[in-house]
Length: 151
Image 1: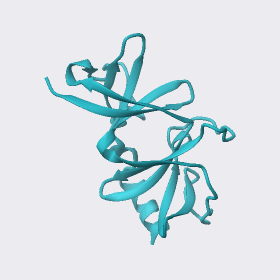
Image 2 (image 1 turned 180 degrees about the vertical axis):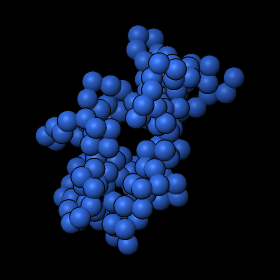
Image 3 (image 1 turned 120 degrees about the vertical axis):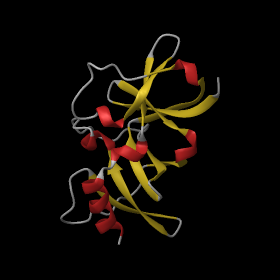
Image 4 (image 1 turned 45 degrees about the horizontal axis):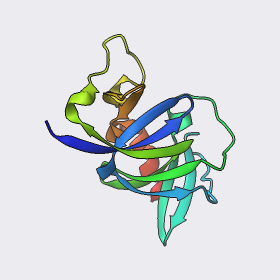
């Protein structure tokens, strides 16, 4: 069985994981320039070393309530479908090496909005981690909205 590395992060009470190959870097929250007439989950734009990238609030994208930023709030800069975007997460936890046999498919009882983002559940010693397919987080409509913001 092969293994893979995940970057784990927290959003609300849940812990999520994204393949490390999708993560470019993790940065502190900074000034975000709001862009008018964009969906609420698109927080705006930041200047990352002379590259302007859109910032997505993953809480809003997942329909969670908004929370004030804390000292642990981070922007994960990720590559999604060939584009660089930042996603706001509550906290970045750790880098985990897992074997592929630790990944269970999402249970069929999990239905509705959100299921398409799940790659699976990672069974850790005392907890479960939700593995996200980051490329699916922004579907066609969201991607078009991001495209409009970035250009």
